[in-house]
Amino acid sequence: MQTLPFLIDNTWTTGSGQPFASINPADGSVLATVAGASAADVDAAVAAARQAFAAPAWRDLKPHERASLLYRMSDLMTQQQEALAVLQMQDNGKTLSECRAQVASAASTFRYYAAACETFESPVTPSRGAYWTVTLYEPIGVVAAITPWNSPVTLEAQKLAPILAAGNTVVLKPSDVTPMMGLAYARLALEAGFPPGVVNVITGGAETGRQLIEHPGIAMVSFTGGTATGRLIAKTCGAALKPVALELGGKSPNIVFADADLKKAIAGTAEGIFSGAGQSCIAGSRIFVQQAIYDRFLEGLRQYAEGYRMGAPDQADTRMGPLASFKHRDHVHRYVEVGRSEGAQVLTGGFIPTDPALSQGAYYPATILAGVSNASRVCQEEIFGPVAVVLPFADESDLIAQANDSDFGLASGIWTSDFSRAWRVARALETGTVWINTYKQLSITTPFGGVKDSGIGAEKGLQGMRVYMHSKGLYWGLS
Ligand code: NAD
Image 1 (cartoon, rainbow, N blue to C red):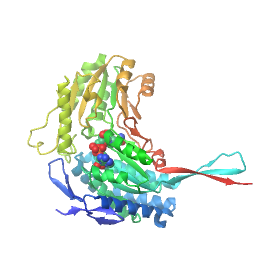
Image 2: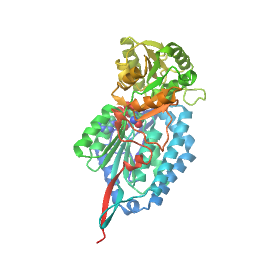
Image 3: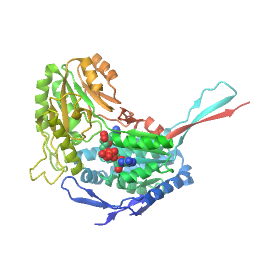
């Protein structure tokens, strides 16, 4: 099998690091052998991006010219939607329908930041003296973008589009579990016509990521991934006084009050945890249910979970494909065993399938745990799989205390028919996003980020572009 190269300075290269395999988690087959970047390759990618940042071919592009490259990325993605969706499905195991939706969403992310780029204005700020002042927003330089494996096509678009719209150059390092979309973005950037060195994509694991963020030529780091890795990266960036944006893990509470529309709440909370096989930072993995409806809700959720069909990701009736890797499937199962040892009842799921149709892949069923307290490990640690823990609560104050008793603060959901209560609880929850009578709705126009151990900064929206710029105050004397 030919080794897939990565892209530095608009040139494909297999570099000098150790190649690695990208595995299709649906059947364990090798999808591709991918080149691994060495320290010398990291140096070369950063040098190319630095040179491109200073070169007139990129620096002197007018905003609408820069925008036209981003529009072109969006158009290419729309034209190639099916091929890109199949590629992500094979690399990550998500269902084809989810992959199609994610490619469409990623294409619209490029369109949104193209529009933001060409309409961006620098304000004239009020002044009192014999001068006027303008605040200029300027690109920071070479941004290192590091991404996880759970939704490569959207998460990489959320970094590449605003980084480039703001006028920076970029070195992207996708996860070594799912390198294929990052390499697809390299190909699309070449096809769209970005000047050499503006978009560089190198492939490799944690060591390549570490070398990249520690590189003195990197002006800013934008990271999405686990909280432990985020903490290490923050430490390195802190020591170097390098700006850093961190989108990290979550353990989101999804809350059902007794006055909620029960059918909608069951479907909403089930989709909140089981869609994407729970491999989502915003998965509603702690489901809090008011005591009066606890038993009825639990029975409804169990039935919903048992109807959540696991199967090959390209089949139309599949609701849940395999997890992204065998290693991760085993990690999820270990957490269910931790739950059992903590006294949890496993109401459904909780096993590695032995059915021959599924045992070749990294499948894991929709799983519900109950009977443990919010202090248990399965409630406090991110499992990142299709595992819901259901907990009862008495009243609003008990709920808020339990929901906020978490190191994480990414997202939350509230199901109620009482408008005032929804407002009160939403204000009290310590999370970056709150959904009311809906869940996992996301819009490119609305900033998204976590509080507490879920991250620093926000992606999406105009704020998601501003984060890749610094301001320069310009004072013009008039006397
Ligand atoms: P991870 O932290 O293990 O890896 C993420 C990326 O960092 C990979 O590309 C990896 O190679 C790289 N990396 C690892 N160690 C590094 C180091 N020391 N220096 C530099 N780079 C390093 O995370 P993962 O397992 O790939 O992804 C799952 C995690 O991502 C979950 O915790 C999930 O909640 C989180 N996530 C967060 C968001 C969000 O928007 N908040 C979105 C998606 C996923």
